[in-house]
Image (cartoon, rainbow, N blue to C red):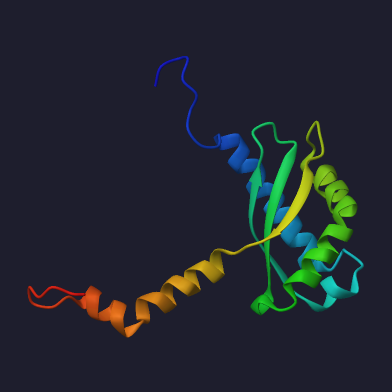
Length: 136
C-alpha cells in the first residue's frame, strides 16, 4: 500500500473500541442496570457495534432472545439511550461520548431465510446436480 492510499475497512482501533462498547452494553443489559420494564423482561443480545471512523457514532445491532417483541425492545433501548451513552462514556474513558443508535440485527433472519431456500426441494435438486443433465 502506498503512503497516500487509505486502508480499506475499519482500523484496528475502531474495531477494538466497537468491541469494548459491545461488551459494556451487554454487561449493562445483562445485569439489569437499566430500569425499564421491557428490558427487565426481555433478555437482549448485543450482536455487533459498528463505530464511525471518528469514534463519535456507534451503530448497535441487537436481537431480543428468540426475536420476541423486537419493536418494543428497540423502543425501550432508544428511550434509555442517554443513560446508556453516559455509562459507556464513563466506562470507556474516551474524549467524546459516542452517540448510540440501536438497530435490529437482521443477519439471523437472513441466514434463516437462506437456509430455508437451500432446503427447498427444487433448489436441493439443482444443487445435488444430476449426472450431466440440464436443469430447468
